[in-house]
Amino acid sequence: MKIDLSKKTAIVSGSTVGIGFAIAKRLAECGSVVVVNGRKQDSVDKAVAALKKAVPGATVRGVAADLSTAAGTAVLRKAEPTADILINNMGIFGPHDFFEIPDEEWSRFFDVNVLSGVRLSREYLPSMVSKGWGRVVFISSESALNIPVEMIHYGVTKTANLAVSRGLAKRVAGTGVTVNAVLPGPTLSEGVEAMLKDSAAKAGQSIEEAGTAFVREHRSSSLLQRMATPEEVANLVVYVCSPLASATTGAALRVDGGVVDTLA
Ligand code: NAD
Image (tube, rainbow, N blue to C red; front, top):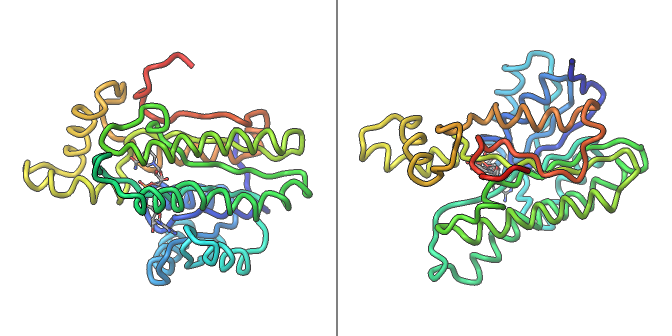
């Protein structure tokens, strides 16, 4: 089985680091033209350079834009008018007790984690439908199903990703375009490393050890019993983007290390 994405163009939101960067790298390895995105020009330039170095000969472009806003989405659309593959990856998270979360923070989480993917899908899906081929993937989370008590607002946005994804898959049914959600479990991305840095330093642990301790304590149903790597998540995402995955649409696919204790 070979994944060939040559002649495809893929946009990955929030891909300067973390899971998004790993997805961009795997897509480039499979021959896709890749567009990386982050908010700052220097981190976008750095990611583009790193990808070109990691995948010699790859065509990689970058667009700096805050995709939690309509203006940022317009900047991206102007620079990259069409795409064959859209990965709605960018997302923010972090513990915050329900009783301390003000309305503005709920709105910020909704803008970054939900509305960004809604806008991008509205912009890029129609041309996929006219071409009769396309792939849209929403990076949700196991937190969509296991709402984390320490960040209920995050869980709500990740559940919303599943609803939008399933609804859009129905909306474009029969067109050759698939829309799916991928649900990672705890994954040692740069964002999670930043979250664990202090506890690792306090306990005198490496970041991997702190990740494993986090999983044991806060995600005790994990069968993997460690954090996944961003590459392990990217592998599933890239399969879903491939022509091989043509019969998979409207699905919520888990790469959660078995955290969600359910049979289906
Ligand atoms: P990360 O913090 O390591 O990286 C996030 C990326 O998004 C960065 O490139 C950042 O610059 C970018 N970004 C943030 N806000 C942006 C904005 N407004 N406009 C453009 N870019 C923006 O995150 P990660 O851990 O790789 O998470 C990626 C996705 O995976 C998120 O949707 C997250 O909810 C989901 N996820 C992560 C985990 C995990 O444990 N890491 C688990 C389940 C789901």
